[in-house]
Image 1: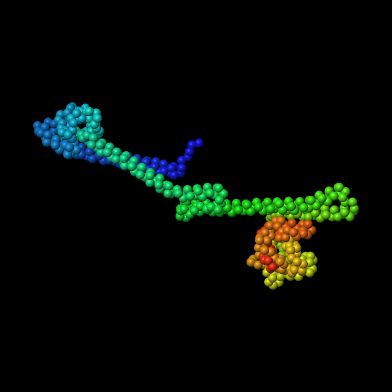
Image 2 (image 1 turned 45 degrees about the vertical axis):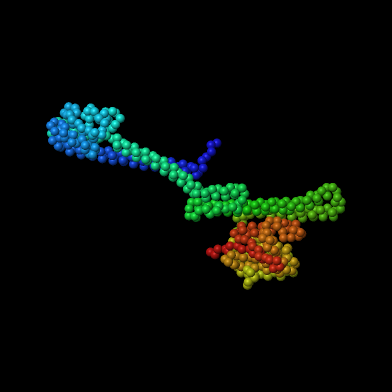
Length: 483
């Protein structure tokens, strides 16, 4: 598998390629413009010179002083940019000609080449006699004469200037490309340093350190700043999700362990009683009746535990689908709860007040499933009866508070510590694991079921308690909308 190039190297190669293309285009344009300028300047000189001489009848191929006149022009040919001046007769043969003494005669264009130059003043390129030099030529017909004047200038100097510019561009472009590439390598290294720090942080997180965060390596308004912020938000969510998953797995293990224990105990009792009967150990009728009583009691407990677990599973899956809502008032449930608690323990003082013990009970209309609410309140009342000494006063408050319907069960019992209060709604949690289970059904699911049913009604059950100050379980539900 071929090794992939790093981001830094890929960016550098892309930048260098773009820079090379840019320098090449600039060099080509500059060279082309210089060459055009050289040719235009030379063409202007040739046209001006041929136009001037063509309109001067005193200087022509048949002029007796022509030779002397051309000889006078010789020193100035280089000065006016026309090193070669030729007169062609009507047949196209060279009648007279003069060239600068600095021009090699062997390199001059031949008469055959000169005859091909158009006489309308258009500048054209022609080859020298030696075939290695280029010339620029302009021809003009003589004024009223049967002759043609051709002025030509070599392009060697212009070509040399263009070649020097091209060479200069290549050398300077190469030096600039190397310099800018080195500067780009350094700049990209500095620019990508935050990404390397992010990479190291990601590697540490991948190794298991979920507490690591991407350092603030750039301004918040930059792309890397936005990336770092987004990554930190994502990492925070991942850390919380993993923590929640760990807590959930721990609770699930505890739940499975407690459920197995709660289910195993009645099953062992039932199985043991059945084995005693099968082995003939229950000889007396009274022994058989006692064994059947134990089996019935444990079967009842097992049935209640199974139904509670099934209810919790149904509430976890789709709580809303198991509710039969109808308008009702919590005052009815509060009155029934007071009567139930008095029936359980006639020695208790049970008061019926408003929320927080302030004033008389008030209306608390809700849209809820009455049977499920009675189950919640039965659990709260049963909890108060089971976890406080006989005769302990209990207060049931009902009404509205903070825009919600409230029903609370408050006792003056021993209360609970903060760690116990934080776990009291956990499934299979009991503050006193050594407590005998009344009726075989106290498995620590009552408060968990109460809270799940309350939340299914878009409400909640909360606890306020402290050691020595009793406990207050408060059920809150949305008020029934007024029509």
